[in-house]
Length: 250
Image 1 (cartoon, one colour):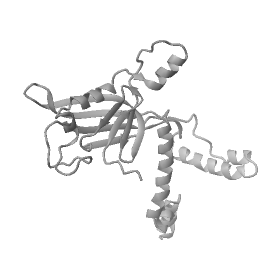
Image 2 (spheres, one colour):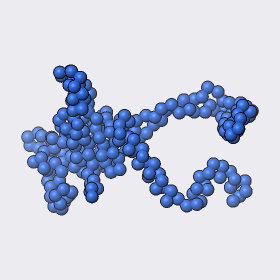
Image 3 (spheres, helix red, strand yellow):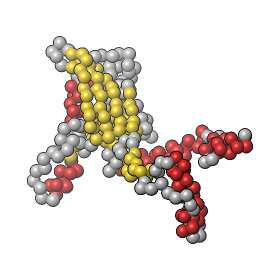
Image 4 (cartoon, helix red, strand yellow):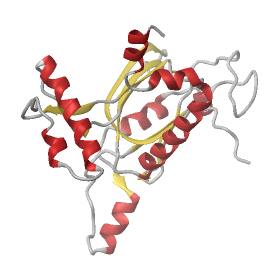
């Protein structure tokens, strides 16, 4: 049986060298943004059932619906919108790294009373910062380099920063790190960082198996949401339910 993950990670094990960043503490904030692009149609439609007349068979039903929808644009004098393409999901995270001993915060791997996270590096947060910085610099990819070598190329220069797999709670996606802001808020006597506040931005890389799995997981969670709904919720969600209630004062 696989234990549930109690920590979050930013990782790329196929990078050279492998990159694995474990959040010392749970992020203080994670925001998710998703945008989709739309454009205006070229016309408003017509005050007629022209689509209905042009359709045959079951297409008559579709034609009637299209004509009725066009009336909406004409009534408000606003062109309809057509979907173009989605933009990658963007994740913004804020979290802290601290090299000081904190006996009141247990390490999930060691137990209550142990020193946390980066204490395993001898009380230094520099290794963790180095991993984060590596996601913003060009690097070698093990798979790409092997394929390049197999095709006869002797040496492959690092071309782009590595992918960054975000594993945090129910989020598990391949991303690219587009922004990294490290603010050192406390120094040791030798001027090495003792505490740092980190802000970073990740954009989902949709050319990924992880995105396909996430889409399947989303459909499953949607199905689970039906168990939280009542019969009245389903009635209220039907198009036109509010108008019917107003007319008949239900």
